[in-house]
Image (cartoon, rainbow, N blue to C red; front, side):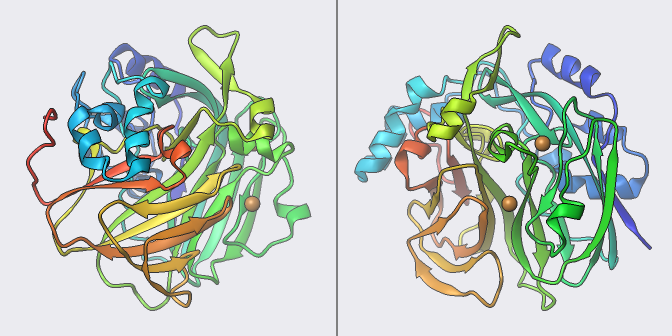
Length: 391
Ligand code: CU
Ligand code: CU
């Protein structure tokens, strides 16, 4: 039996308007979107699109413990200031990333199991929309599905992927799966608005891979949000763990003709001068009430992709050792006891760690200019008392 991942949910515009009207301008994982998916299998698979309602904890509004506020809290800043870089990260976002004024819906970072079937149907829909990339900052994204990043695709080694790209945008788009071995000139070609393209590939190699639009200029299509992660479980199952997916990327902004919505700035992209660097499409979104959680001593598995388009990620967890790092997520690539691991644009890593003690542990890129622009996620281990000043 086949399963289907369909991100071609209709009703995007009404969903935008409804969410905007209640202060939730971000579309990620919206149950309204899910309800428009056809079958229950689609709904199950759409979790790959990051869609489990229980994880969508609207941030209390306004919450000093949330998002950028967590970074700019004096108490947390003090906690982090034992590292000079952290002090910089803690103070800079106060101006670079405004404090949240509205609740938003976080992209669901949790990894849920791959379907059991050996043939997996995946449909990605290229489209253009608006996304909140930092609290109160709306950006004209180009996406697969309704969000940047697009849905998390999770399959098993040796699965057959029956893939379809639909172009519901206003310009040419294409797909490039780093997990596939397939001719670029045939299956990664650009298609026009209204067209679709299908091909089949076998997920021969385990790991965590980027997918993206490669239509020229690829810098612009990736810079505007056309990327996501595909995770291929190894044939030999991994031990059970608390699993999260973090896709790092940059946004380069300029004012647009549409009041209140920023556009991509191609010149800034070419010069590598991002305004925001984010995990899963929004600056500092996994902080405060949206922190990632784990128990003391529990195995945590972080799957990360660096979508770039330009900056390298210096993946680091403050207060923790990366017990095992598997470059590109292949179990054959084991590194042990790492402090920081470099993930290039277009690369990935699978990181396993356990954190023995209750507390707060920030995940950052140790390239602190980028951490200060939003590439920070908090792991809350156990039930520590809130940081002073937080809730
Ligand atoms: Cu594109
Ligand atoms: Cu690529």
